[in-house]
Image 1 (tube, rainbow, N blue to C red):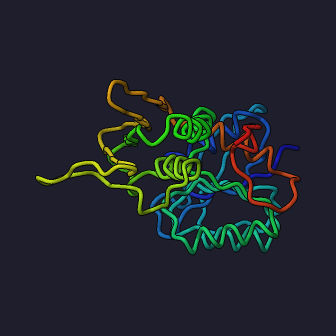
Image 2: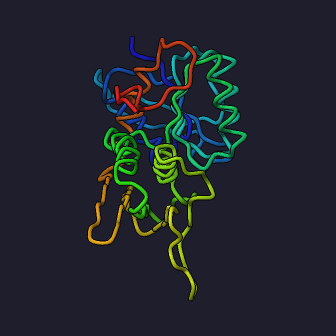
Length: 267
């Protein structure tokens, strides 16, 4: 028997790939594929290729009554509260990659981690989590004379801006250098008097075509520029990271974990 998995946001781009790769891996039994009430695909049957042969999963708008080990949530912020309530009621571990959450929702996730194991991450890719670790170290090593700019690029359909990953990059830089968020961040620039202010972090969001995800952190001073860059060529890199996190999380004691914990990255 594989890990019993519930997928929330299953009709979205990420959700569909989670279903496909979870089935393909042969390590998961998909208990339910869930999306919002009123979604036009509710009732649709997803045909998946699993290690044991073809399998079918029906998209539903209700949480399952069958026992589950872990839920992966890549939905919208509006669904997060109900997902947390379901996991708490049924003692289901939670992996959440939903971005654009409010402070209240972040607090609710933290509170839930006192009762169930939770991983919340703005980006589940292995490479991106290495970048999360590197940027703070680079910023502290380079010092105050290096300006910091973050440029993130995503597809035209992404709703929130800046991306959750860009905000995590800024948070890690601020943590390592003693800066305050959100005061430190300048979102774009315009006007005749828009000179950069020392110590700030510039944040720029690009939305175009079908860009999967590109994050660049620029450290620049007079005489040289250092750029740390991560490019996601496929959503599968996020999916494989989320599935790896889900397998790792099952059986862990209640706590709020990071992808760094899953990957053994020392922050």
